[in-house]
Image 1 (cartoon, rainbow, N blue to C red):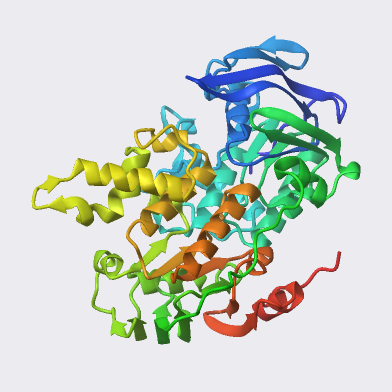
Image 2 (cartoon, rainbow, N blue to C red):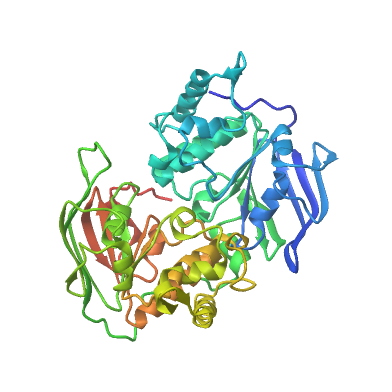
Length: 514
């Protein structure tokens, strides 16, 4: 196992500093004179909404992009990182928010890609495999080093990304949303690794939209807003309200169940549905589950990692096959329909992994928004450009995407705005039922509130909304009903007046008193 090198110097002293850092992309000012300090052997947590400039600042500190102006000081000396490789040679590594793994390569090959271990002029695969196994053991994840990454679930892929960063002897490790796809147990293991690293003098920069989680490990908190640093404090001086207030202002909440409209007929009926487990598994991911959702109703499905939430939604959407049961869309059995046909009939899914399954990175914002609705403005071999532009402009306005226009690159948007594009793409098909798998994964609290407000508004117009989450607070927002899953079954059902403790208990999660 690769151990981070013990670094010289006093714990707590500033090892890396950004001074008056600014970054512009054309007329867009991503950073506006930011000052930022990283302390030796401590965790500095960076909070802010999507688009606040967090990822841009981290890319500058890790050599991925160059600042438009300002200075970086490492160990008291000005430095210019010419590339991420240069920054890594100086001991700075980054775990990016969006996974950058090669799905067709093994776990071992992803971890050592570009810095292979050589022996006698050839790659020492045996040593790479040994080190990979040691990394997996430290992270308490039972993953075979030779497993192709594409065969891993999203949370396991996140673990591989973390392992790749840990395999380098970094002095400074930047973690951009490292827990966005991890289970509670995996998060606990990661926090133990962070504690071990900081005890050996490694500095951590931690970015997370899981605010309560981040508070557990931080020593210093910094808030960015609109490209500027708006607040700084040490851990002893802050709480959750301090973070939210400085990020988005006062009087903030995630909304409440929509009212003032009539709940209609059953839009989606799931009867005794069974979804097999992974290949070779002796259990079912979903086991004889039944659920009905009505038009205008918002239903939340809560459960821990492995509860079967994702498998349930993907089966209903046509991405996974069932081994038994029935799925009815407004009374019609959709078992024989393809994904495209289910979309055409009004049943759509916003997937958990927006980068892999929800967006086409080579397309523009507009092309992504219109992709699922292409039948609406295509006749034969011809496409109506005017109708497509109208749909794109309307979607951007309805889902409040912050962009220069439909022609902008999808990669130019923040994570929250990319998520709005995925949701907008599916809403543009005028569905009757929308399924959303972890719709707030990797987006900030402000963008999260906008997403939930949008879903509540569409429910009032008659849309049946089913969303899954592993965050209890999201259950207690806009849902009329909360369905708790545990080991492939429904373990409890609650109305909107339920307590957090009851939800957690029904999921099999231990309730920790604060």
